[in-house]
Amino acid sequence: MKTLILTCLVLSVSAGSFAQARGREEKKQEEKKEEKKKEEKNDSRTREDSKHRDDHRDDNRGRDRDIIILTDPIPGPFPRWPDRDYGRLRMPRLTFARDGVGICTIGEGGEAPEVLRRNIEVGAQSPTRAPRQGRLAYVAPYENKLTLFTVGDSLTRPHRLTNPKWGNADLPAWAPDDNSLVFVSHRDNNNELYVIEASGGTPRRLTQHPGNDTQPTWSPTGGWIVFVSDRGGQPALWRVPAKGGATIALEGCPVGLPSDPTFSPDGRFIVASFEEAPGKRHLWKIDLNAKEEPRRLTTEPGDYHHPAFRPDGGKLAVSVRTQSGNFALALLDFSANGLQQLTPGTLSDHRPVWW
Image (cartoon, rainbow, N blue to C red; front, side, top):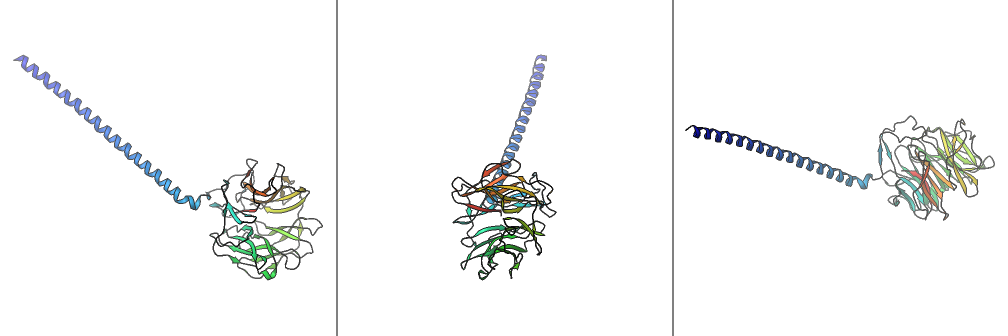
């Protein structure tokens, strides 16, 4: 009898231990199932997030593939911005004139250029961008004369500003407030500078001299217009108050014949192309206050024209003559001190602007 009772106790204990072990095992299996469900849920969420990001990129690839949103300007060796609100800078594409084609646009990556055809007049050239609202001004043949047009940043219907009866209009440059433009006209049988309101009207004559005044550029502060003139005997850089007045020759320029002046975004200095020998031009930095000696920015031998600062001042777009004799677009990176060619130069590309 004792043996039977003992056996029953042993069996009872064994059954309890087995039940406990089985319970522990079932609990582990349940925990594993829950953990697997969580992992699957996380994987699914990750895939959905990734798909959402991919879809978002796909949705925006066509619209914003070459637009960079900056909260701060890209750092560079030059002072950044004048005292204006550039909190969210939209970095535009590079827009330029291509011989025999018209106005084209390209990103910094150097992909194939796109031709701007919608609402851009045939034969358009000399593009220039309005600093604030991004409108584009250009000249194009109209009634056998080069005529000044503007078009909105979404390529809306163009607005003709000048009358072909006044003669050719060329080389426009926007005022920093977008309200007016300066341009070159031969209407009085001599190249002079004129200013016209962006809304239209009669141009105001800015310069009056027997010399040849051309290639104007407006200072970021709006007070001055710098231009090239041979009024002193040889081509040199001059400046005139934007409201009109006496012209002043710029001091501290390097030796050589200048062309294509452009202001730095902060307005402290000018970059221009100077001819050192026939077919050999280099870009020089000129301090407007004459506190620094002029400094040559291009180091490699070449023929450099039409410099245009990227809005943050970190790079300079330029036209460079290639071995074929045509001009290609290139980027001069100040931080890397290198030149990146963007277009092949099979056709000549001129006057780049950021738009």
